[in-house]
Image (cartoon, rainbow, N blue to C red):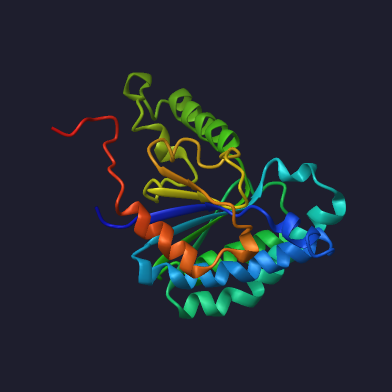
Length: 234
């Protein structure tokens, strides 16, 4: 089997990485943001066409105001700093999640980066920002229900192929491989529908220490897996 076409990553461990160095949690988030560039650059050599990263969940608002405010500023800084590099590298950037709660300046930067890179095709980078799998399904279901109510969709035509068309990821293939760093073995409400048949790798490495070499090793390991999607080889 070939390597994964779409890799999704739960980038966990920034806070612990910082605390181990007696630094504030935001120090770890800044280190984690720098790591993103290296992994993005590692995708094409490893045959990865789609990369989806979990930047901020709908549950992360529960963190301290200082950390949340710092993260929002970090996102703005990251987009501003990396926009040209991503565009010149042929990366198409998309954002998924509910933008209603995000500040206007951040949304403006997100819209601009999506527009600037919309014709790129070397790598499709999707950033999940204020994203939650359950929230996404709820929002998708609401849009589907509105189409049924307006007569644009027959209830009898609704099946498992219908709902994905209303998800934030409707233009993306489902992830083949989901990686979570930092030693935690849970999916934390990430791509619940899309990852039904994804392969998972839970690694102990904290995100700021997650190297291109480790990423490459995991994509190579994936290629040796036997994916049957519920069937049995005869």
